Image 1 (cartoon, rainbow, N blue to C red):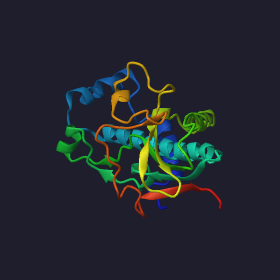
Image 2: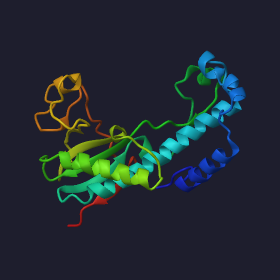
Image 3: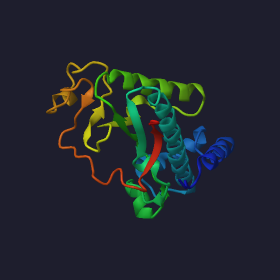
Image 4: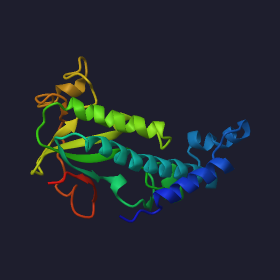
Length: 221
């Protein structure tokens, strides 16, 4: 898949930005950063800083998808893994939601909030093994110095092998149900241990359409 900029280009930009210190660090720079609080029109430095964080987040998420997939592929019950959502798409410049950017017409690279992985399983037993696989992948990523991504930022959308019917998401809690958590009160949540349901959530029919996904793993037949 064509990525613009590529992950290698992002890494080069990241290194250059770190060396040039384009984001505010000194006491004098902090005065300039009052623009963040007062919502003044963003200057070139603010746009550069926003671009920097958005590009690095995208890079970290893309590497996280590969790292988690590698661990998931070691589980015999996992038959397929696909990356979808914004991290699966080429980055684009756009007007962000921040109103001071929109008023000034300053476009920045799209901000990716998390990683979406579609995972097909032979059965929904022992979902705890998927949680551990996700954690192992992210821990290895961190140890290799390729970015820090929290486990709750990698969403696993679960399906049964041979079906495109969405079953639910892998929960982030270790116990099911988690005492005192309102998330666990949603209808159907926890009927299958660690399989989370979201109120009024409907998986979009076109979310996994051709051209919107990157297949990361398919079990050999």
